[in-house]
Image 1 (tube, rainbow, N blue to C red):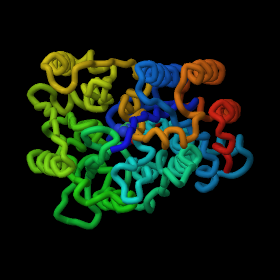
Image 2 (cartoon, rainbow, N blue to C red):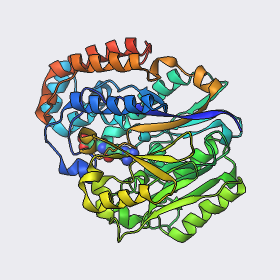
Image 3 (cartoon, rainbow, N blue to C red):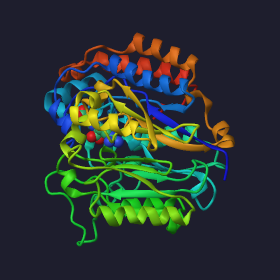
Image 4 (tube, rainbow, N blue to C red):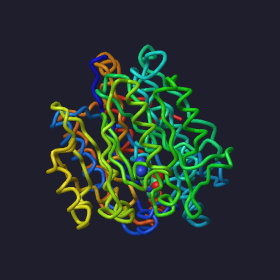
Length: 446
Ligand code: SUG
């Protein structure tokens, strides 16, 4: 076993955070369509979470926002002329396409990639497969810049392997770590990688949801496991319950979260709960670990309450004494059933003995809770020093970034503001400065 630490790479919220209702199947995104957002507050809420965890001694880093609007998309879709003319034409012809080109969705870095730490992989490197996110137009082009950012940060090929996104076709719909959970005894020990898929392209025996889309296929999950060189006995594939997808559970991380040997999940999360948990238990036994399932019953917290409070979209943080802290969004304390469940959870002497609550409402209103905002990367000491240091969270970086946000971000953004070409220039100025702060000079090159 190596001496390893988990880093949370949070997405720094970009200056164009807005509510465009682009994610069919994501209840919060659809309900808040066209309301005013506050990009400044969104970014500061995210930074406050990063700062608090870094102060507590947890490994914390960030992934930068992407440049917006995506002029390449606008050109590809037939808009011509100067940047300003393309924006004006798109605003007139199709505000929804312009909103896609402007989306700040890369903030939800749980969807950036699937990550397998070196303890699990055949070649002893940490593997990343960038997610293609091909279910939604506004997310389908994130992978280009995500790959560039990951290659810049994890550039040392002796330690890291970054794989490009899977083919952008429905058969390989891949949403990254949102549908992937790593279970283990210790972060640095070999683990069990649990892949949760929503449907199959080629197997008619697997039936998917009826109302909302299943974004992850089993074929994609299997491809990622192959690319990462995972040992078959350490990999578990289970199907997400299609009925919950139809109730708004668009990713597995809206209904389950795991870390260490703890799997915190809702009884309706998987197609065959008993068999799914048994598979995890057996795989854990094979690596000499014992699964600790924390099961939430529907009579305590309904699926609807789980979706509205984002109880399971929480961060399970392993503390130095081996116990877990659960970082939940503020909405959990506003839901009586969830609040009372949580009170009992931390007082019953189980694995989870501490609650941390954060105000992340700006992101939550687009369906992005604490767990969506971070990508977990377990790194050995050598790997941690081999990655690019400019993205590692420090007090100094926190002060520089809060000042940068205060200087460049608007405090109100309405859908019609996206038609203003001045916004594109503001974004470009802000991001150019950011690449200097993070010491990533080639981040926004085309
Ligand atoms: O893909 N929302 C994101 C939220 C992602 C949450 N991530 C995880 N569960 N890991 C999505 O649905 C809304 C954008 C808008 O409507 O403007 C959006 O993309």
